[in-house]
Image 1 (tube, rainbow, N blue to C red):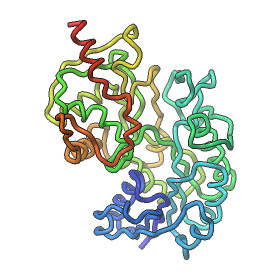
Image 2: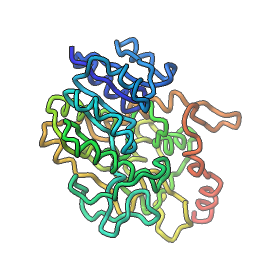
Image 3: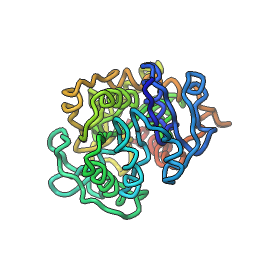
Image 4: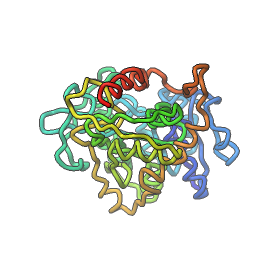
Length: 345
């Protein structure tokens, strides 16, 4: 059997890749430091968990062992991380490095993590301008993109058969920051209305983990040194995403479409990018990649899982255990929403 080694393998991307390749008959080894994070369903299906620190060269060599037909790195954030990976990327039949649309800049030098919103006038192609490489703190908004660019360049300049996949807003079962919770919680709390900033027209292109996994399988069969965008075949607006989630859970609400004169923060949501941010995925489809489905089709299982795992508080509202709660700090200001509705009804 062909073997895939996934570094950072128990997250939303690694799990999706594991399921995809297990179904195709691959031997799947997932690398991480916390055995408790290994999904029991994956272990039962035949995936193996290997304990190692991805950023320790010796441990990385131990799990790589005699080689791999496919090496997938979900934890390559800096040039040093890329240099650690290089010996194995040169040996593996094919290597995939997961990167991000955060590397792209518009004509004014703005990017998705800059203070000023970027203005990409057309869907972004892989040939689009990127940030200059950097080596600061990759965990900050300012440092993330430049470090990703530096990591990409180390791998691409090596000539090794490395495919860099630039993903957008990733969604899927197991996400630590499930953005869909912004609307799922409102459904569970039986909110009668949903407020949407900018008339709900904001677009920040989603990337289903299962679609990303399908692209990984495509490039595994066609090793090469390249960059590919990865995003869903459609780019829904925030309004469409809210409707998809409410519809999936059988809820109806009144849409209140806010204009730009409304108070700051009111009606904001995780996909409220204006001007829109859309990735061009033509290069991937030209390679033979076929997506699993559009946003609505690929997010359905995630929506159902969030609703099933949510827990009701004593006051009757709902919360989601085991996620990055700080990420949703400003998401559920119901009193301010209710005051706006009462004032404008």
